[in-house]
Amino acid sequence: MGVEKGTRDSDIEHEEDLDEEPGEVIESAPPLKVGEERELGNSGIKKKLLKRGLGWETPEFNDEVTVHYVGTLLDGTKFDSTRDRDSSVIMKLGHGEVVAGLDHGIITMKKGERALFTLPPELGFGVAGRDAVPTSSFVRYEVELVSWIKVVDVSKDGGIIKKIVEKGDKHERPGDLDEVLVKYQVALADGTIVAKTQEEGIEFYVKDGHLCPALPKATMTMKRGEKVKLVVQPQYAFGQEGKDASDAICPVPPNSTLYIDLELTSFKPVIDVTGDAKVFKKILKEGEGSLVANEGATVTISYTARLEDGTVFERKGIDDGQPLQFITDEEQVIAGLDQAVATMKKGEHAILTVKPEYGFGNIETKRDLAIVPPSSILVYEVEMLDFIKEKTPWEMNNQEKIKAAERKKEEGNLLFKSGKYLRAGKKYDKAASYVGEEEVFGDDEQKLVTAMRVTCWLNKAACSLKLNDFQGAIKLCSKVLDIEFYNIKALYRRAQALIQTTDLVSADMDIKKALEVDPQNRYKRTEHFFIRL
Image (cartoon, rainbow, N blue to C red):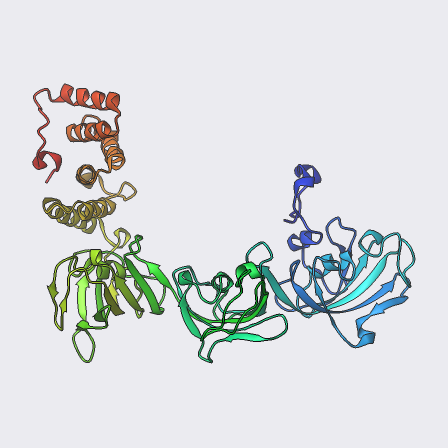
């Protein structure tokens, strides 16, 4: 990194440990003006800008640059010139193919830029000199950066080298779960073509791999529309055994290096909705904006639902049918559809793959168009037509917040009575968020909202105990006790959680403290005690 303006030398310790390349300091200095000359850091290289370049990007070491240059001594004597040969040259930066100092200068240039570099002997031709360059001579190179190809070591061991021929769009790259559409041509060192896709390309899931190990690895580094040339060493190709001929590929001899022209035409993002690989969403068409439906939203969707064998068992909003409207996180549809739709944007079109645990389980279910057998994997093609998000606290006045909190708490109570502790806990969280400590309430409301928060925390702690989330229960009860030092339920519930975590000393202290307040309480283990309804 470069030294910022105004930084004193004494402010920088252990300068020998800094990983800097000559010229990087220029990035934090004012841009050079045409005709201005400046030293690149402390390298001894001087750069004079002759013509501005385009854009802001500059090449890096290992990139392949195409340049014109004219080399002269300080007195103007010319000793080398691509202009005279009427042919630009391609150089791999960082390898000193002309002289080392020239590489360090070129990495500061933009496409189309012309600059004059003055190099000291140690970064030029040294003490020995060369033909037409005397010993220990300073030299000058007038350079034009015509273009460059970015070179990336994909595998970090030289096994897969990627040269970017054409940049892609945007910044997104496919992930391991995504489905990609690529075109490629694979050749051997002698130019023999051993594999080639059809004009429309070929689709595959990155995690499943395709052709050889190098292809999915390289694809994950690419953007939509990017075109590259890959040089693939045998360990990432077909190894010591090579490859026999098949329908898709000609024979590949053992230990062959492959040369692959690869284009990432497009890809469909695939999201693990539930985090346990049981509900996947493949996005066919991106939605509008950045807002998603989220929990509690009223959504309107159209869909076609199929079994894995293609049997359609339900349609909504298709062929003039009525779309489906429901509120997310209210168990009005199967869990997989519910949770996936909550992640969708307006206008988004996606395919959902739902395992039985988030579908109809292991029971046979009759739907509109067909019977769904037990333990069926379901496939939904869904379009988000519209949604109305639930109001957030900052969109409400105080009375609306209090009413919303009371409503969510009651919904949680009903779920708790039904044994749906996870969903009940989420309702209590939502209720508490409406009357959160960061919200501003009047003096006449403060007692009410504090009591509401305490109730929600206690009830969520009861859910946590049922779900064996003992640390969660301890944390919630502690929040209550920070407000109400001798809250009986908080003390007993925290004690129960502490017992389960084998912190018996702390549990004993909580129980004794509770008995000090209410000696007659025998801590009856009933649902009525464990939850304040």
